[in-house]
Length: 247
Image 1 (cartoon, rainbow, N blue to C red):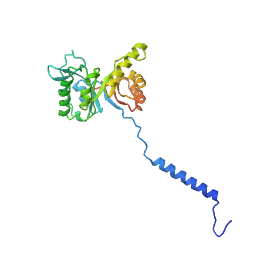
Image 2 (cartoon, helix red, strand yellow):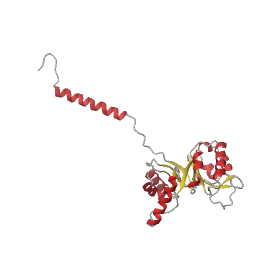
Image 3 (tube, helix red, strand yellow):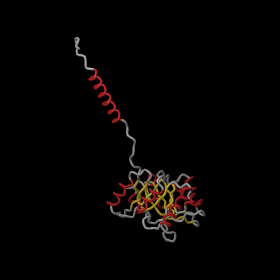
Image 4 (cartoon, rainbow, N blue to C red):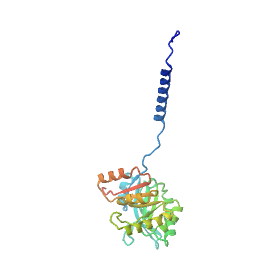
């Protein structure tokens, strides 16, 4: 019925209201900030054991990994992969040579940590942290997980270096032995597990709630890119070490 102006059909009015509601809801949803699901993965340089290499790459990576041994008789760390190596470069010298050291994350692969030297080594490393105002992520990694708690309490990130076995080739008995050993390390309170790239699927499968650190020795850029794509969505992987010798 029309009386003066036009009166809309009730069904038409309902449809218009519904369309308006849907439009408003769509706009509100589209404008709502989405949860940040971006990866936190950091790519650091593997084995920056020489001053020359560390200086060259300090501006290209957010962190560096180095091998260190604590020498009790000298009360200092030496930068070297093997305790019997004759290298005499001290960790103090290494840190002092880097003008960007305070912003870098440092991964200390502690080769000879034990329950006998952990307290003196901790004091030495803490002094270096304070001296160089190290503010990045500082990781102390060792196979001696029972000697890591004091570093954790002092504010360092710690990691248990899991045995370097290939999960795809060991027999079932060995596999279970490795799992149980790693479980003991986790029960001790370590914040991270660290291992080779080929151990990632194993760590993710057996210890899905544990934070992880990884490294690869593969120098091919395409492989490294694929690896980053594979682990990039895993928010429990904090650092990937990659090799780079082009300096």
